Length: 381
View: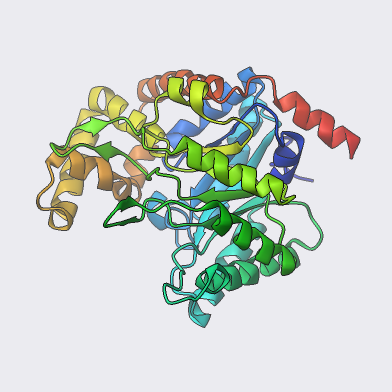
């Protein structure tokens, strides 16, 4: 018997029960695990479903830049869920990136996914969006490498899960990619072609990540000042969602890159329901650094110094603030033990601020009370 009463649910239960409801499910990224308790406590108190996730780059079989392997991340998530009593949550493998599509790339991805499944993950995001054939004669040909790689890993998940339920996210249109005209956006016909091809291959995703103007992480102006992320193209997002619905697909949008998006914009203008999953990642990391400035000044200074010294060459024209904001995530593994050993006052400050900010996101997502709909759905199965 499991030691934890509050095991992660298949995210398919969350997606199916809240399909086309006026809500967005929060997908929170605790790459610094100190934020985990505040996030989960807020979801519990708001009675909102929660997805917790780390990307391949953050948590691979060697620990990624978070310093947590899938097994360690799963253990910490389950322990915290049990401590706070969170019953409606899923454990998600975000951005299972496939960037080359070579046999070695596919095989290493299979090994990672197998490790995630063995660790108890209940949700998976296959990201082969980098694979795009610019010489393709039509959309299907342009997307063929993405389709093939996504299909291969999706079939591996199906086989490895052995009939168990799980949730699936896929991606078309590389998020944050730019050309001479600015950020490249996913077209409705591109999304429809992609999902149709996957369905023909026996792959049925629940949510689709698209390029709709957002970008991962912190956003800065030309002077290196942190600014709000307001570039999400709402009309394009709705157009993609409408095209999917018109073609009979029960697939909705996974919105990435909203760390700096104002909550009032999300509440008032995001198409809740068309966007079914909303990712918040670097936002929580920023809270930790903010608290460390006051409660762990020596540790914060060491992290900042290490980041700037090691990544100055990658962006020599950028300010120290921007270099720290964009690259400090790589310091998490480097300072893992010291971060894990911070004092109780630091932990309380992080808990309190993360808790309050998570409640704000859940409010903007119109997610309060929707966990009961998931419970009701599970009872009906």
